[in-house]
Length: 32
Length: 109
Image: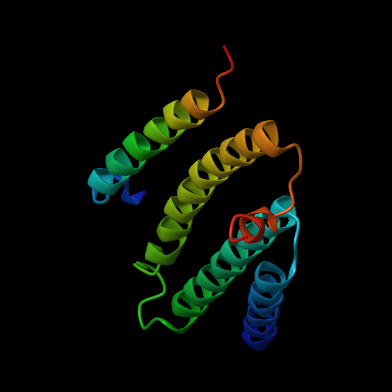
C-alpha cells in the first residue's frame, strides 16, 4: 500500500541531497 | 472536522512567518520564522490530503496520499536547509561575534 515503489526516484534524489547538505554543513563548521 | 479551521490556521501561521522574516533583526529568529512557514505549508498539504481522501468517489482504494508523501520530502529539505543555515550562522558568529544582521549595512559605509 505504500507508494515507495512508485516514488522511489525522488526518494533517492532527496536522500543524496540530504547527505550532501550534511557534508556541506560539517565542512562549513570545521575549526582547525 | 471542519477543514476551514486548518486552512485559516495555516494561512495565519504563514503570515506570521513572513512578518517575522521581514521584521526581526536576530538571525536565529529569522531561521525560526522560515521553519514556521515551512511547517504551515506542511499542515496545509496534510489537511487538503485528508479532504481529498474524504471527498473521493472511491474511498476504499484511495490515491490521495500524494500530499502526505510530498510533506515527507518537504521535511527532508527543511532539515537539510536548517543544518546548512545554522552552519552559516556559526561561521558568521565566529567572524564578527554577533548574530545581528545589520552588519551587512555596515559594509556600505
